[in-house]
Figure 1 (tube, rainbow, N blue to C red):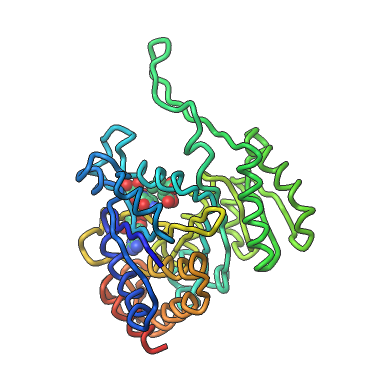
Figure 2 (tube, protein in one colour):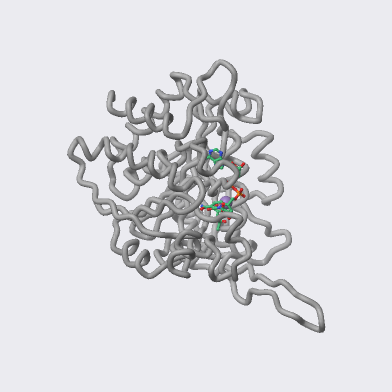
Length: 356
Ligand code: NAD
Ligand code: IPM
Ligand code: MN
């Protein structure tokens, strides 16, 4: 198994180090893993002028899976847009055709008090957000800031064709079939034509999945329902921009954005795995970050790209044990638990894993 590892910027290298230690446990037990590191994001711009350099493109394309930390930071915020670290991330998603982004918001029972909602609202929460990742207003043309009639105009284009909607729809229906068979498609069809097409295509797909109950919800209502009664949802499917926003919102239900992993898959389950959060410049370099979202992303990598359900579950069980034993990074800390650093959290997961 060839894994391209892209630590990225900010807390990226700190959290990736802990995920690699977890993979080392499997390696020491005989799992064949080959790791190649490469640059992506701000560090890549500094070193090469490009946020997704050619050397990284080669390594990422040749790998079976990509494990990513996070990119971006204030020092790169004034660069021309093509050189921004985030463009590197969008570039690799598009280059590898990673159109299906799975973001599971699962509450570990021990973290019920870390959520900003009442424990009874979130207890047992298990939602799968399926976010389309290579289309929508993120990639639509025309785009840019121009001057028209003497004033500046900012423009982006929200666009989906039916094939793009159908392929993400199928991923979502299939995910629902493997779970509780409820799929909620989120759109803004009362205002936006692209999402009218989205709703039409989801309805056209429904007869192929008669065991799945399809419902529709407008995105503003969905944002409200997620904090009112999140357990009404099983699988949610939505476009790139709505999925970005709703998944950050859902992360807080699970205690912290530092807990939410993700998988970004192509048609053949080649994937990139990354936490949903960013490079957290405010805590970077301080050994404070929660590495669990990244460690759980490595578990998703074993599950989806390497078909190794047993090892994926073993990582998730190790994380549960560490939380049950009371270890917490600052973002999920509460009185009565033991505050640990990023690397100490890694120590605990490695120890729990080795004991399983
Ligand atoms: P962010 O997710 O980096 O941080 C938001 C808040 O959550 C901060 O207070 C941060 O300290 C906290 N946080 C995030 N991850 C954490 C963790 N693992 N442990 C503990 N606390 C954590 O979002 P932002 O501040 O809006 O963005 C910062 C930079 O990251 C920007 O340049 C943005 O473009 C980039 N970004 C990158 C990705 C990615 O690489 N996938 C995702 C989101 C944002
Ligand atoms: C995410 C991030 C990215 C996105 C940014 C950094 C391009 O917020 O992975 O959620 O918007 O997709
Ligand atoms: Mn985001």
